[in-house]
Image (cartoon, rainbow, N blue to C red; front, side, top):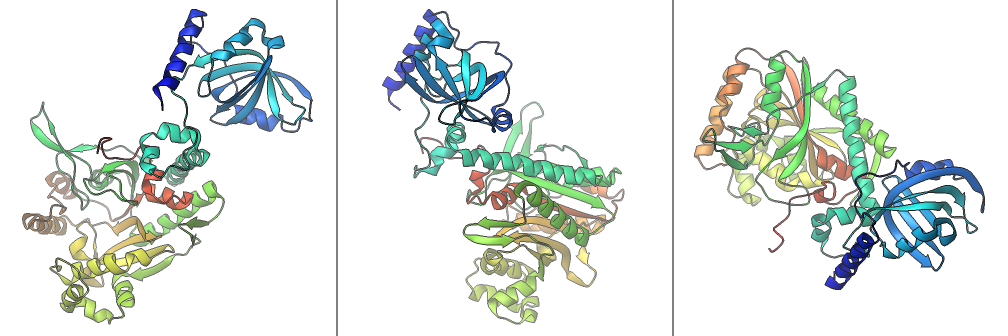
Length: 487
């Protein structure tokens, strides 16, 4: 934007002040939303007057001056309407219209009518300036090659791009539907700490900070799990939280360091109950917000109609690599991982199977699929399978090649839990910065008894991506993490 354009608006602002017009008034007239007005008077015939006088407020998106008459397009959060302003109706006030610009906020009062050309309009009896913009709006954002400009200046992106606005309206409705479904089933929404002394509950590198008054290092949470389990130990059998988590990791189309996580815990159920709940939450939210169970994502049709496919991790890897599933249960899995280019070579067969799954299977899971029976080595908070001590009762839900949810039959044996934490600490000592830490406060609570339960974490941002057909997680986060402007 040239300095001349900004200066021209500043000059208009000065002129308005000289005219005694407050460009940023503290009080504004009571107004109606534009969308309902368009619906209410949509049946008016050409040149028909409704006799209904209203006031609308919004941003001026177009201004066409024609001597003694002008046309203004006013946009609010519900719709757009044309205002017809003439010197005959406005008198001396009409002169001030020469000093307003596209991008300003105005209030227009007048009768609703339809023009000769069929445009629903308001015959302005008064026009009031609500806020003067001193920078012009962008002409068009769709053609920009550098999408980071859109993310960095999201306010302008929202103004200029109706699809972007619709995406974030859809996001809000999706989250509301999920909350409503859980509330109707007796779940209680709670809030747990964001700032922790131990970053536990997930495999990730945390963001660290220092609390000056307490002189102690602290971390932004990487998951919600362990505090929600404390709530369940305390007697609240159905609990959930939808909140921000933070992971000090890379940025991609599927990853943002700050993201929204939904975690749910239900006493007296298990991983099977969580599968049923996952299907219900996703399909109900999709049906209510998008009107169906089929979405288009990256040129592919995805059908969320239940029941969804179920497959064990071992079965999925064996099928993808055309190997005998029994091979994956032995030390031969390590050799297979090495042959397939997995570096560094995993330490156990379970870790090898997981690495092979992430490399060769995950991106192929397009239709919604539950992957089950995870190795115990990579699942320190899940209960062992009663059929195989090397596996746990866990699933991850995948679609469009992305993980959408992760769920367990929750481990409630405090002795086994301590042993799992200890094993994770050994991994950390060996250089694994993402290994979980021993959380003594959680173990203390767990030793007082936790009911058998199922638990699930769901990535809300990725779910919104799929529902809205958005190619990047940054398209569904209003203000995603970006590089510094000068980098």
